[in-house]
Amino acid sequence: MSLGLIGASLADYYEIRITLDGKNGSFYNKNYSHAIYTQAGNTVSKPLEESKPISPQDAFDKIIEQVIIQFIKDMQSQGVFI
Image (cartoon, rainbow, N blue to C red; front, side, top):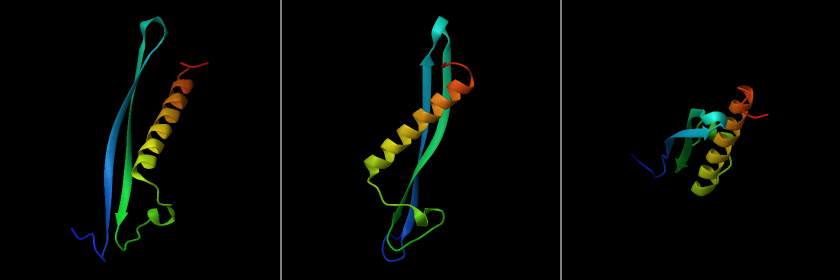
């Protein structure tokens, strides 16, 4: 793989499982898939061409934020949260 002038696009995939210990001893489990895409060198690939660069830590923090928000929405749609 060349990371020089040609450039490269890389993906780091994450599998995240959230478990909620609900009322009355019930448990709610949800699995989520997410990814961080990294571009190195002279490359542009869709749909990343309009993305703004951020640090790896900021990208991971964003994943956690998005997954937690989605989990809350999923639980609300199931009537778990009022």
